[in-house]
Image (cartoon, rainbow, N blue to C red; front, top):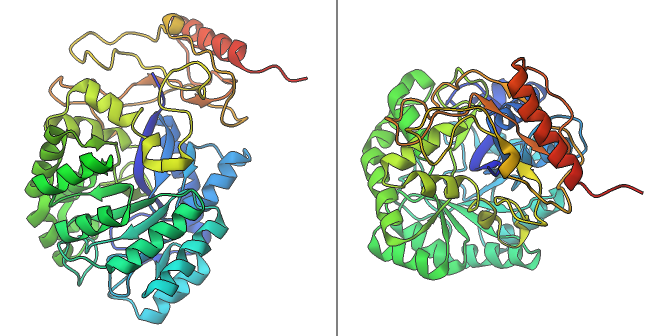
Length: 425
């Protein structure tokens, strides 16, 4: 099947939900963790990540040049926020927050049209493939209300228009309807979270062909973890208030025909964390709970991913002639979770790719089930694959595969990939 997409995650390199660790954990330490997180995401079967703010804009270059192993990363650079908005750190002195922008470029506070234009251009200068904004208040920020709109309409238009001049689209963190409607009117491409979507907002998304990235996983996981995750009592209160509304909004959007793409909002380093990288597949069964079918979820995790990038969308997410050879193999039929899992048999899934995205190797791993993964979803969707082969380009290694039948199946994948690659002269 096509490699999966996580269209909302953060390479922050932190191990707690208390985001003040931006300042207590050294940047090189967080970068080292994030590099491992990228590899972990790839080994979880996610060959593409649209980051939602963090260190991803720098990791993307390291992956592309082959320095580290990871998925293809499409990153926005800094998260753009109003002062006091969701992208601000309310318990930290304001000048410290501004210094974070200068030191690591993960947050950027901008107020007024000129500052918003300059902020977008600064991210483009870093190589951003998409622009991320906070159009409403949030849960993990202390002093704002998730329902309240934050950027003004003229600021939103300035951001979208400046991004569009460079063929970039805008992704907008939005919980409340005022922020959702203002973002859609300004031309934002994707709505992240969408907690208070109603019928009018869903109809507007369908009309504009906007994409919803609901990120149910972080809501489910942090609701279970509570303040033990490191989030404050106020964060937990807001999370519990929106949890059921958020699930209903996903169901409403799906019933209305809104296009949905998989995103987790994962931001922690380590699979042992409540929302750690490597657990990305945990979003899939939660979308089934919201009313999507298994095929709907597969589409949300593959074909709909590139749509979140607008003009920057690659030819990926589907197995089509001439498209990127971006493929994983799984040990069960993802559309028939009730069937007995089986070893990969890729002979009938030939990919006649005429080009590949990057000249880098993937790895074939026999991985243990991921904590918080799709296993135990009542059969609605199969467990996360315990054997998969993520690669983009040539498959060179078969490390970790001991069963001879699995080796033969993997060798067939390698042969098909090699025959599809353009010959070098």
